Length: 107
Length: 114
Image (cartoon, rainbow over all chains, first blue to last red):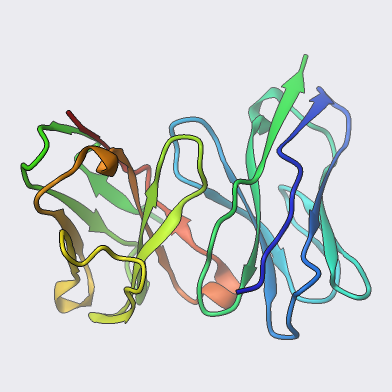
């Protein structure tokens, strides 16, 4: 199974951009890159996904490296409500979660 | 649209007892998943259904866990008998087409086995 590597934790200041990195050096050509986040006491929430091109939605942006071996989730202006565990997952027929990155947002 | 519904929200049982969890996915979502999330870890896939058929149950401890999805809609996950290490949050998710649309998760059932 393809695997992803994320930092265990990151900190950000409120209203500043946050760049959450993810390495996936063994990605295959058919793997989609998905990002989910999990707020305390809730189930994971879909954030964004992509295959090769950068993607934007109302929640975040996803920047995918040209060789697809890494990606970055960008929160343009972090708020206190963005404090969560962020999971980077390679999807190819199933969704297997790692430990994710715990994002702390400081006021 | 309504989200993925799960019940109960919390459950406390003694070891060796039985327990069942219920999930109602989003209408029209053919794919349904059950995950187990132990405190401090990411969710672990237990079983995946496509309509009412099992696609992947390779990580389901079949000696004590069972799941069904009758009529391709609601699903139940059962543990019989429960062990202390089964204490976790059990999450249900559904998808219209996971490759393009991702998963929608319910809020989960927190199980405590004492």
